[in-house]
Amino acid sequence: MQYSSEQLKEITAIIEKDGKLKDVAKFLNLAVNTIRKDSRDNLDLKMAILNGRRARYYLDYNSIKDKLLKITEVAEKTGQISLVAKYLNTDPSKLNRTERKHPALRLVINKGLEKYKENKRHEKMLAKKEKAELAKSKKILKMKKPKRVLVAKLYNIEDIGEENALARYRRMKEAEKETMSRKELKNMKNFV
Image (cartoon, rainbow, N blue to C red; front, side, top):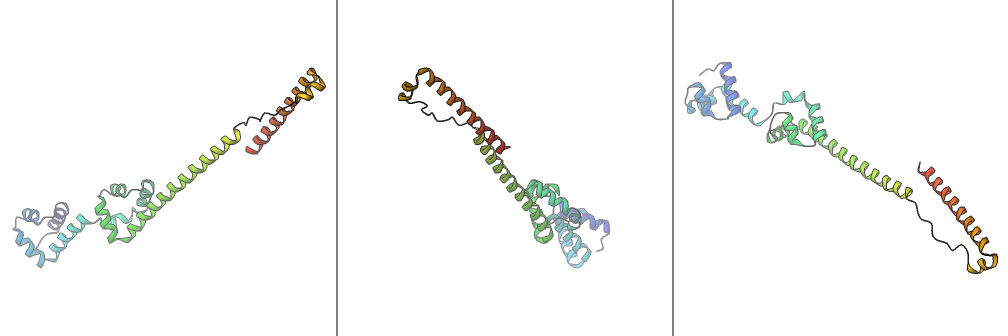
């Protein structure tokens, strides 16, 4: 039996959706056994059925070829094959079968996924580096309390008198503050 090109296209569409010969037989008003027999004898019918099955199991690579760069970008941004499949309006299993059939598609997706992983590693390293720098800056800005030092001994106070001892003590404290402020200023210059 001869089939028109419109019938063959419809047969391909029916097989792609459901994949059952009984639906094709219903469309053509024929028995299922007749369709099976005709598919062995008629090459056009056989190709229409095979094309429908391929379309059900695989993506059309010719339509994907133009989107390879965009597929790489989607894989790089999302890092998920399921979202790449969603971008191509298909399910992940169909995408996986198409990848096995067309290695170029697999390479493109893997390239995007590797870039995603590399970007994530780079972000983690930057975060660790920033955290370390922040901790370092906090250590520099922390003021250390000076250790208490005995300024005057008892025998010195008795020798020079009480009033002179207080004056000496004040001078030593002022000198100590001045050295501390110089150290802080030096640390701030090194930090900046």
